[in-house]
Length: 246
Length: 308
Image (cartoon, rainbow over all chains, first blue to last red; front, side, top):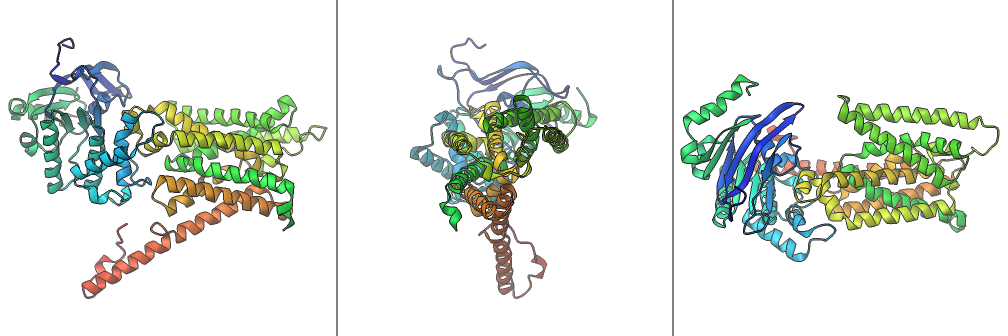
């Protein structure tokens, strides 16, 4: 599959197993996510959604398996990341613009400082998330939704081809949710891939093209209209109630 | 005020200035990464290394003693992180146990050293509370050179240290791997602590690391400003403490420095704009007053719910 001239997948995961203290959190996950689409990763609490995203990014050790991001037009794709906002220290002495500028750090490489054009680009990314008025604000004085949009802007500043997002809609109000989804659709229209952990069953068909239902193993993955069925949902979510179901 | 013309005092003050300054800079990162207790552990654990280095070599040269301190300090740090990783013992318990055991061992070794017939061991006990007046020109030179390197490291890797301290996962994802960064930052903390133990003493060195940074954090919401302020606070505490120790008969430097930096923290916590206690109380009062005016005194339910 890797040998095809222009691969249609953004991410390929094969036989991925991740365990904390010998208890598998993800078991034998095989997954191919399409390029240029919005994919929702869904499943009950403890299903391994965050773990899947982090494993794709190489942030946590895996027991087994392979994750690859096939080249796009002969180049290694650049990956952007929107973590859950709790992962950072929000009392840290930096401004919103500082945080968004950190999105450029990956491109800069060791030692090199962000230049003025990097800051200007970070400012543009802030504008896209409607946060430009908060550029100079210290990050501890942001609401949950503003924190989320700051992280989104930081990911935009990464100029990525593929965006992995851990619950981008968590704790945001309806208006913010709308503006975030508009932004994601704009990314899609630019040919970017977005993979997002999502919780709200009622918005899946509206927001996403592709859905991956997981509960430690992959239950189903495919186009929303084909995969997002009552039967699959029951299989995904019922397992959680049984407890240590593997 | 004749001390100011005293050549020895100038040398000592220069050493304390550099030491306080670099402690502020490195301490800022230690405090922001919530690793300030690591410094405390390492400094207490350095004592047996100092005495053992003397007992083994018979030389009372600062570089030799500090090499011993570095060795035992690092051993303790590794022991703590090993314990946390491999057992169910938590960080605070591991730290307290290792730190006090090493310090106890140091005190035992010190007692042995003091029983030696000749007087060569004199001055070793100064490592407990620090004795800046014992600083030689070569010691100050060592502090200056090491501080210079540490400062250069912080300037060069500013961006990396900043993103790693704020959001380590994002740093890793951006291509700045965790292991080397966390190792370098911890090592810098350890080196700073070891540099300071002769002047400030193993018991109080961690305060030198933490206090200027904690004070500086009150005054600014920008990392760069915070680090510069911490360096200034640390440097000033160092010089003032050295001065107090020079004029006050028998007053050890460490406690003098730490009292000064403690006062800086107290003043900062009280008086700093925005984050300071007084400014926050004022802001809450003003808010309440405004609410009372706009709602005609019906704001009693909202009392004390200042949002900050």
